[in-house]
Amino acid sequence: MKIDRKIMTLYAVTDRRWLKPGENLAKPVEELLRAGVTCVQLREKAADDRLFLEEARQLKKLCSRYQTPLIINDRPDIAKMAGADGVHVGLSDMGIEKARAFLGEGSIIGGSVHNVKEALAAQEAGADYLGCGAVFGSSTKTDTTAISYEELKDICQAVEIPVVAIGGIHRGNVKNLAGSGVDGIAVISALFEKEDKASAARELLELSICLRNGRTYQSDSVGGR
Image (tube, rainbow, N blue to C red; front, side, top):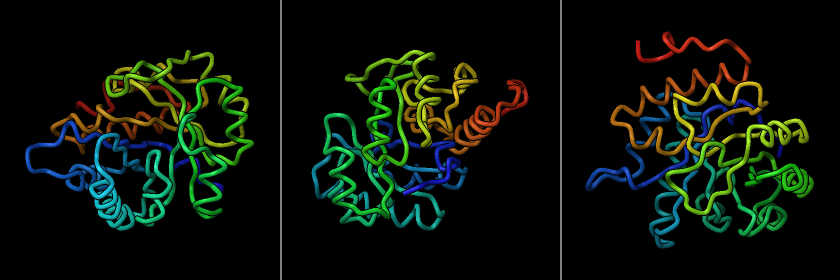
């Protein structure tokens, strides 16, 4: 499936660690959707299948309302049962080709890569987009592989499909990705840990648009006014 590169502009990856007591993911995700996030990934490493599927179905309804794709992390089976728009798989997960065969040509398939060799292999396997990182380390994942700016730039130049950067990205370091060629940023804590998630999303969205379009950053005029 070919996707619009703009879908990658601000890619929100869920993290339930920041939920308030009694709160579910729907509330913060809807705040982010209203603020303009362009893609949502439901990531659940510890939830049981029942909760995972319940959340996926709930978020699918929300994302459809805002015409925003919902991607499920690691679990093509959950994605299919929930009617999600696609799945994101890592190198040790089900695999891009198997996910494509399972979900069909109409689904979005993303893959995690860390170097040009992996990126080209993922593209050849049929990935619609690539997630590259961790570009600045990660406070939410302990099994990440750091990649340099130069490697990220080489990946973007080597492939024809959209590339989204992930890993430790926040408002203060987005500009360091300028010139790399990425189509957007995937963000976790810089959205979900914030009390005012909508403001954080709007600011990161504008920064990411500047990044993609190669515009000059005006840090004193983007958010925080």
